[in-house]
Length: 269
Image (cartoon, rainbow, N blue to C red; front, side, top):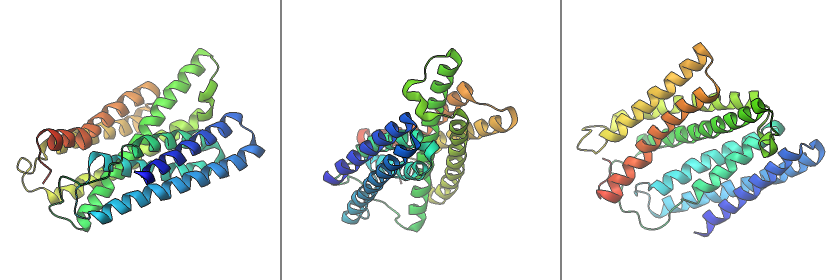
């Protein structure tokens, strides 16, 4: 468990450092701190990837555990944070995402896996990659939706922003929210389409709950994007729809998996 702990430490240090530089809004000092924080985050991401790769190499045919899936999602979020941190106005968002990545990486589990993949191959790898990356971008969207509502509430009540000022300007936060949702929606579409090639019998493969929840989540995010395009949805309305879709997708990915494997002792497929 040493490598995951190192990655978590790097993410937390990078998040705090970026948050401080964003809070101070000092362009001269902030540039040096931002570069140092990005370097630490990159080290964390490299260690994070090494831990995942090492675990896969030890058991290439093993099915991903919920902790493994969370760690992969965390790696995608961390890499996104590194890219965002290169832009001075996105330091606050990058700090938030590194904190989320640290929490998800802490869930990484090592050891013997109980289940193995029935039909390994590049097709399954593609499906898993699309599904986990989609969940990562939708997690980013969920985090930005919450941050947007908190900042907007402070601005409307004319209260001091405090630490929330690291997320300003509000327009950038809102733009990042819907860009993340759109990217997640496209990737989720690819995941659903590619997953159809592995379905032979929904009930026999124990996939019915997962598929139904994922499709409903896809519909919810589609309605949200349509509402944004046609009616300009934002703020609390966007948060409520994002939360609904995210919870449904979380139940599809993690809830059904935990119940199936830990409670019923079975595996998808």
